[in-house]
Image (cartoon, rainbow, N blue to C red; front, side, top):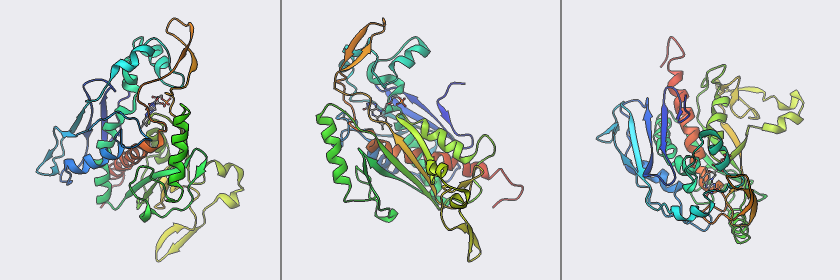
Length: 358
Ligand SMILES: Cc1cc2nc3c(=O)[nH]c(=O)nc-3n(C[C@H](O)[C@H](O)[C@H](O)COP(=O)(O)O)c2cc1C
């Protein structure tokens, strides 16, 4: 019933809160024999880490991963892989003054409405600290995908109204503003720092692409690949919208414009364009899977805002904890992790779909 598990054949269960003892994940269903080591997982976590630049929260977490089970002599054993990271730089005192107030745009009110109790320290389970477990598990999923020739990459498409245009996957570097157009990235940094100076925050659009996905992934009807990707992405805190391929632009086209004509290139069937975003009927076509996401601005801002307290009395709030002036920069590795996890799950499920398989 409770909602901390994602995936059926390759599944993850995350646990932990922002200011609890630590956060972690249990990965179940990873086939035995996959080569993986702590350094590979650590390098993914380092991309998600806080305190790396002025564009991210100054909270300094080392995020050192400990693999507790499921890996022996550098290879998965087929048993549950449990991983944990201790919380070391949780400063709960900054949250004392807003303990009885609801932060606008955050989950304080809705968590209290649901559970009747709320861990106000850093947002508890609603905090993106939970995504540490997803990124650690995503590193394993990424290795599994690589075994099948699948690659996943996400980047900042738009930030503060500035749009990145050029897309050359080989050129996209693993830098802090992972942006396809290097000329545009510094402008994005500038606009975020300006928002921070004004005690405000910024949202953006992220794009994530999976290359090399074989045709046939996805389970009609309720576990269609696009439905599963949408669930994965919308489960990431602050992701508020999703489009596949041409997305909402399809709504303004004629059928003759929106269809991707099929072609046969050397015996391989494909499409000339990819307005479908690599999925038809909930099943991958073999074209790149292309997803765009709306990331909302960070709700915790130092600027004074109107709100109410737990008694329902009008008051004001200035959120002084350590927060990201934009979420998108740190969301990029989480977005990649969730696409890797969804595709890994469906690759494993595809092995059950036919009488004959290879
Ligand atoms: C990587 C990442 C970092 C985030 N950092 C912050 C933050 O510093 N401050 C904040 O208020 N929200 C942050 N968020 C977003 C909140 O967790 C989220 O807005 C909140 O839980 C409410 O959920 P919702 O926006 O999905 O409705 C972050 C989200 C992600 C994915």
